[in-house]
Image (tube, rainbow, N blue to C red; front, side, top):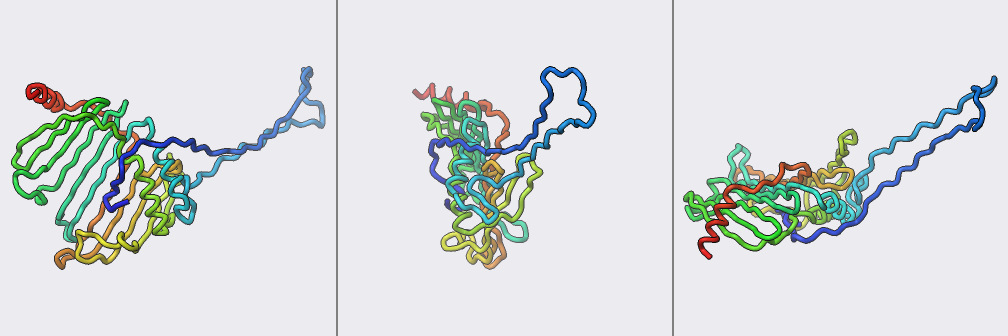
Length: 282
């Protein structure tokens, strides 16, 4: 996985994930034809209590960390298959005094039937000239994709193409899991009372190419943190660097979030404007 949590967009694979629960229950019998209560000296046998299943770590994860990234990745894909979900990726570079050097946000919401609404925005000061795209939004269904580009000079352009019908970021947990495994991330926190239970994994002082960031002149600390549900859904993953930029203390990082209870995807009004414009030009 690269530092922006971007990977190839591919169709999901499905694999059943099940948890077997074993319960010991005591049963008491009585005469099938008796009408009187138990005679003296006889007692009623009370069924043994059914044990409550203890929450377990996500698939492929143990208390020591990620031991099977493939299992974790498959479980994440399964959680998103045939479900509505939203994914948001945010990249930031800022100085310690709070000044933002750059902020880029992109996201996609997948609705019923694979209808997708996507967006991308950047901070104003990172734009270079009036012809720079400052906002990009797209809507697609099974047949068409409509994109809207807005520029720093306040102009707007529409593009209509065939729909790629891709389900974005489903395989993200594969690459995140590989990173967590290779960096020996450990489970540092868990909330087993939550619904669903969540587990937090953390690795510090990243190795090799992950130990640097192009937005910082010098990196002093680096870390990756992920929050995963007990069933394997990657709720959030972030990679963070501290160091200096132009001799000033700064922080750079990327965060990806998944939400499986998003708002419904509705067709924006500008889609009709774009389709009418496309019809006039053809």
